[in-house]
Image (tube, rainbow, N blue to C red; front, side, top):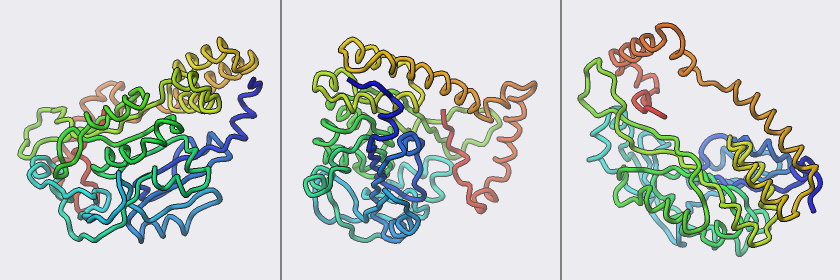
Length: 331
């Protein structure tokens, strides 16, 4: 029986898999578990080397492109490197939206090695085989990666953050419905969907528009009942802590009640969970978004509309300054 949540948190060897690990190593979950391991996969060799040059203890990036199979495949490098993909960009879709047309074009391509996570865990140490959380941001190939991670997501992973598309930005890419089915079939629940919208090209009036839903960041957490059935109690506590950190304390309480009912944890842990919830509530109140704060001020919405028109009028200059994503509306 577990008696201290804090002791578990400090000592647990948490493993975070970051696929499409461009730029910095960052996640609040790595701070949540001090004894954590970060494993990144980034096929762009220069970018992977840059990450490794700044790595700390417990961090390692590998120059592989993940998929559902091993082999060799073309990586398309786009004008904006963040949009590079194993799938060829679909210009017929990109040109329909403001902002997107400015950086989707493939400027280079080269062959990269493909591997699947299920293949890699056969020859890896326990940190990868017992991984807890995955973040996938690979511009269209996320479903392939999940299909190549069936063993991992069915037995070990308790949370997945994955970019999803609702229209084919890349030719023949899998869309949200296919990713959602893989996750549901493996005992995950959809907890959050941060949506990104784009404004269509040619729309130049002052009328505000929501824009079309194009892609999003979906968060899936494991159904805790499957972990109880499989007596996977360490993962239950990890799921409880991760859900709390990501803003779902109600799910954490449900997990706690189930663990108490099954005599997996002591009543002392119940008090620790409530203390964590109180600290979380204070922290979340401090995170109020700037746009939301401005919108609530007198004439705040008018100011935001004026700011949007100002940016519209100077869009070409803004793009040159490196801010082409203004036309992405996130909700």
